[in-house]
Image 1: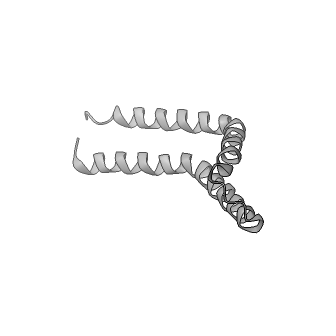
Image 2: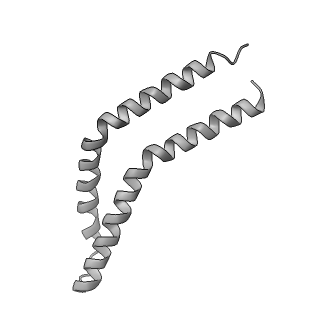
Length: 89
């Protein structure tokens, strides 16, 4: 395997991981910002109040995105395995 191909595999994997993780990261960012805004408005400074909304949000998003996640992960795996088959030639 030449270095360019290894770098391409690594780059593709990292970009795909960001593509999969982005919806969850954005959701936790929005929930954290809204919770922080509500805490500052109500002057309620409890650190554990952000945990439950984030947990519920992540669980709900996981249920909603499960078909997309499974399809994307299986397509990525098939693509990478088929590309690995061409390495020996």
